[in-house]
Length: 114
Length: 114
Image (cartoon, rainbow over all chains, first blue to last red):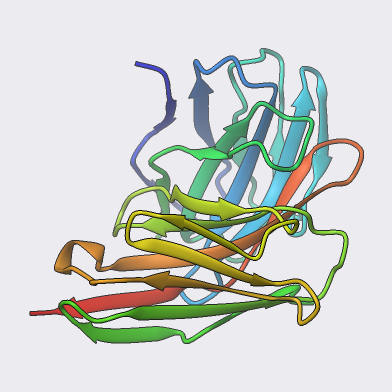
């Protein structure tokens, strides 16, 4: 089955800790994205990557970092600099290029800061 | 700056009724307008999408109406069913030269009652 996997499903973090969220896709998609979802605010773009070893900041990149060492993987690190990290994090991918290629989403990771 | 405005925030419709969700956008560079459906604890999934060269697109019980001059588009769900109860997001996409990027509305929580 082709798709996007995210792990873990639930993640608890103590204040001051960095945590890394995993995102893997086997769709052979070029572009990958990370979004943050908060109640009543829709999805907001954190980072995106069009090709391996290249990525760009989205609208809310402060306190986050990413890497794209392999086409199928795009991990997100939530650093201690992120002031309010509790949220639902969604990874997505698409063929890339034109704007009307469907973005497919993973099942999400719910991060809670204790 | 919210580039895609969505209303209403929540909607209650009786089974068999019509659900209508509206969105408005500001950026005329957007050239693809998808609607996503999200169930609690899951990632969003593409429901239906339209490009601005057509005014309406229908897939089963779901219809998008698009008004380019007014910069508005809407989702109509005919014969609404309890299984349609979910959160719906409109979005608008454009390619900025590096990748396609989606801008999401804030979501509408739909509840279909018996």
